[in-house]
Length: 253
Image (cartoon, rainbow, N blue to C red; front, side, top):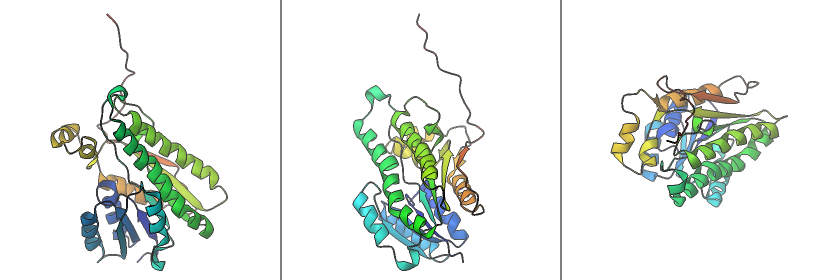
């Protein structure tokens, strides 16, 4: 069994749950958190026979709760080797002039602030031990704009730049930082974006073969298991059914 410890946020579904299963297979000890207690309990029951698991409900938007959870980690889980900042979401697809401001607030609070709170709580220990790895789950939306992607894309652009700046700050240490930027992937992402509207969510994936949560988990695992002197700055991946459109032009008349 590996002595490595992975702390995965948003572990109750999608990329987070797939990462938990991928690292469990390799014997990593797991710290799993998310907002849905029932799903956490199910995942812990599934994986505990394979590897030690410490799981607890956590809303990453709550800075005090994040700090308290990290401070209360059992001794056998305290030396976190890998932080996977996976918790995040997209809400709505309306143009900026018609958006729901609460959706914008929720995306900023989760995708930006939650990532900051978790990173700041765990990073000092990594630096003190001179080892560790922060893997941030970004998105191609942080590089390539699309209609309705307004605030979601902006939050993922923040993830991209924050990851690069972390690398600059950590120069001289052996702590690594990677930004994983998936394209279209079929998880609960669209179901959350459309607030439980199954019909709209299903339409997103009609007639295509998107990435899977397991594809992203494999990518995270690969980046995390490179030799200690190798830092993977970023990985951008898309399904082959997805590419780039021409520039949009609005013509009058």
